[in-house]
Image (cartoon, rainbow, N blue to C red; front, top):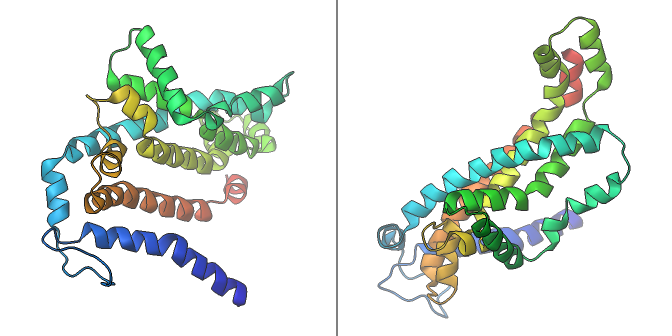
Length: 267
């Protein structure tokens, strides 16, 4: 009981308090100030939300981010699947070294990668900001997709594949019965995690995309940097965070309901 109470307290301090403060700051009326010793804002309104929506490029940034992130997620999944299949199903010389090399994008600082990608993309003659960020994000987040899909491919039961083949099942039927139940949780997790990583990424999107291609983090960092306005930053941060929290909750629910072993046996 004591351990549960401590964990709940840590959860409240770590998650609920910052989120609640962001909500309160985003609803602070521009005509008043929230200062000590006031525990709560003196007046609340949606004026900050209206101001940010009407006076910034947030609508365009939302459109850009929510077109870019799903495209990055699908592209990364497609690129990661062959490598993940090889890691999960085949033994070959240098496999361990190859698996370590796929993790390199995770240990290199974001702005270093951003500068590298910008130089590489422009040297290749790619001037589309959207395509440039798409390529950079796909490479940057490949480690997440490869790792998740490697686990998913390793869960595929070869006895089911062989049984389906012996019974004369078509390639599509074998995939549906033997592969899909094991791969579905990994595919879903990969898509959502890469989606969230892409939509929250700032360094590459700013260095490669600015000033023509604006994303939500670009606007957020402008309010946290030279143009520091805490209430407006709170609005943009909630616009960025709330959909991602809902996606993660949905992912957890879907993964809990998935049972590849039972589904595969049934198939």
